[in-house]
Length: 205
Length: 205
DNA sequence: AGACGGTGATGAAAATTTTGATTGCGGACG
DNA sequence: CGTCCGCAATCAAAATTTTCATCACCGTCT
Image (cartoon, rainbow over all chains, first blue to last red):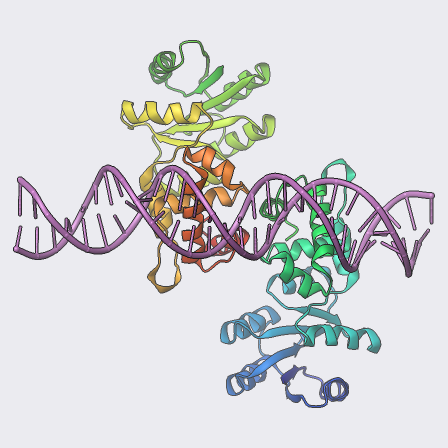
């Protein structure tokens, strides 16, 4: 497995590389110090499966960076590891399709669990972010979605099936169904498509 | 049944009223000459079931007019009868939730068929508009949606079930299923929610 | 003018898969 | 103790897929 680390701080890259070598001894770790460099590396290594990306790097905005990477390799999984923790930025990154957002000050244990999840095709977002987004939904009768329900809603908004959502969240399909049932009722929707449309109209996804 | 005609041309209102009286002898027809007047009439007649609305009227923009009416009576069915035939305007009106768009120069026979449809809870849009919108979708491999498939897609985008779409389009559920199967395949989607999301990303709904 | 083929729309049926609703249970946490 | 999350099971409904059929329309060919 090939992984690319993109961060402009050499020492941080070294630390993350060491960490990854422990988690995946057989993985090949490449690195880049800027968006431009990352794109060059990707051009020359089409078999890279995951990029771990800082947002605060030179040569272009992080949004353009992500868009250019997506354009170059639409199926590449992009994980963000960033000191930027502004909720607006995180939300924007999620909407651009990154599969995880890891704050740089995350503790190593949580980091490793999140990395394992992501390395196995899953996703990770900081719980505080999910909680806040769920809280931002104005539902009738004072109803609220829990963080997990909101996560499921975000997957529904990508058109995933219950099976696919279960896989992404590493839970059983039965659990996903319970979350879906609950969020449909809270949102006053009768099916998943309606729930997604309502959430879009509320501006939460 | 109560119907409100909103048009600033008195003679047009008279003509439409006569026409409606023929179609529905027992209906009660009210009228208004502006958006403001229409809103006043609606406030005083909560049992109005359908409003037939010109877009080019005084006192506010047609968009604000529709939004204000929707706010006042969310379940009221709004039909547009307008000389404005710009595709952009028609699309905007549809997206604001009007249930039909009738050009003023429509021939009386087609008008009456369309009115019958709408009076029975259905919807009507000029075929040329639907064809154009369908053609605007950039699908892979030169694929295109037919006008009917696109109509079904628009209903999917409102979160309707197959049964509900069949009812709206006055066709059988079997027919709807066929259209859905065809549009899913043309769009490369595996389920209706994905199809809606893809269409949204293409900017066609 | 008529035949023919292709396309789109309609309708039906059947099978399979997915979804949604409901109920019950156990553990963790505040 | 209540809520949330996880899991399972059952059932009904809906969705998806596939196949078959008919009809109308249009363009092409004879």
